[in-house]
Structures are given as C-alpha cells and as structure tokens.
Length: 185
Image 1 (spheres, rainbow, N blue to C red):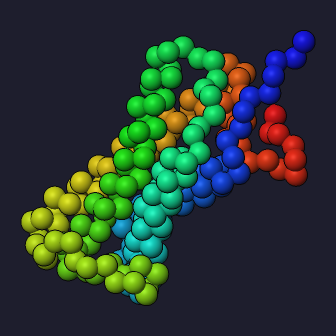
Image 2: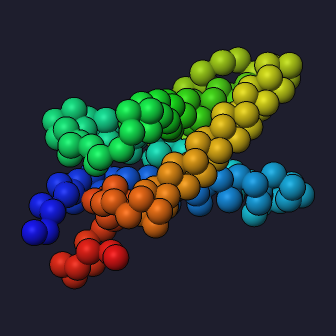
Image 3: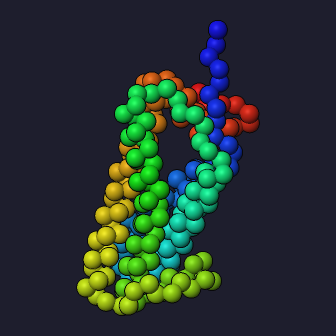
C-alpha cells in the first residue's frame, strides 16, 4: 500500500520562496562583484541595483511572513526532533537576516551620505547622519550579516538535499515548483 502524498506548500508560498531565494543569491553575487570595481558609472549603477534588490527582499520577506500567518505550513515530514528544532531555528534566523541585511545596508548607505532611492523613484530618509567612523562599523556589520546569511543558506540547501537524496523523504519536493503538473523526482 502506497504512503499518502505529502501535503505541499501552496503556489504563492512556493513562488515567494523561490523568487526571494533567487534575489538573495543574485544580490550576494552582485554585492561581491561590485565592491572591487573602480569608481565608475557602472559601479554606481550596480550599487543602485544592489540596494533595490535588498529592499525588494525586505518587502517580500514581510509578504512571506504575512502569507504564512494566514496560511500555516503543512505538517512536518517525519524526522528526528533535533532536526525539526534545528530547522525551526535556522528558518527563524533566515527570516531575521532577510530583514536585518537590507536594514544594515540602508544604515550603512545613510552613514556614507548616499541616500537610498528605491527603483530610482522612492527616496528613503537617511536613517543615520553621515559619519565616517559609523560607516566603517556599519559596513562590517553588513558584511558579517551577509556572510552569516550565506552560511545559513548553504546549510539550508544542504539539509534540503540530504532530505531528498539521503533520507528520500518529500521535504524538498513539497517546496519545489510544479512543472506542468509534474513533481520533481
């Protein structure tokens, strides 16, 4: 007798997850690529895009939290209690970082005297006054938070692959997008 199918996340939750994931990975790559560039119009444009993506991740994170509030996650797949607790802790920290990294970037940008203008249309107020010493501290904070997020994302991906390929459970499949009505195998 076949086991009952595992409950999946809804289409909106899956879309929000993967759009946010793609933006975060792309923004990490953009951030690492833009820093060593010499000062140029291209570098300034990339900094603008980096800020826009960061704000978008911040907004999508709030949308994800609101969606989750109204649409609880499916029942957990069978796994040891310590793994369930570890997943809960890591998800909590990922959500916190998806909010704190953009805030730290905004604070850092403000402390350098460069106003953030979302999509080139919506100016954000300077969160802190221009201050070179504060800027150095906030830059380190932003870099540290990003490195922490990268490490947690790597752990998150490794755990998902472990559940899929080693444990052979449905954890990854229930967050994977449906492609023309078919499940990812």
